[in-house]
View (cartoon, rainbow, N blue to C red):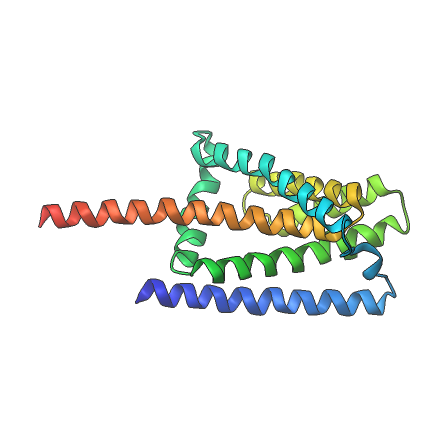
Length: 207
């Protein structure tokens, strides 16, 4: 009962936060008279190509994530501990569909803000490389849980920014971000449930 309530609370907070972030970002696009439609391309065959690039771009991120999960480096272990204690339990009882929707929402809202509003906005007043660096640094600061986590987030932000520059399509960055989050969280939940099952089995054996 406690875990279900925790999951519902997490989902509620995440929905309110990322929903608000999405609305504020769209309003800022309008207020600053920036074109969002110019950087979102839905038509075929371009969308098929860009989604294919996005899916392929997820692979290096997941490879690093699996390394992080198995690493014994102290700084990376701190990240593992944070995920195990604060994130995984909160999403462990969410259905696959709910988790997918949540990850899509996070991907859309964060990419519209960081790769869209910030990176595009700075690119209008300076060169693309400088805009990429600034947007990535802000992305890292927004995810500053530990110094190494902030650094990793900065690098990932730069990677997503490069995907956007490569395709000039925010959908590429959104799909990469959302797909990575979903697969990573599903892996964490799977590991968490296995540990819980082992713990429950050990308790039953002791009884």
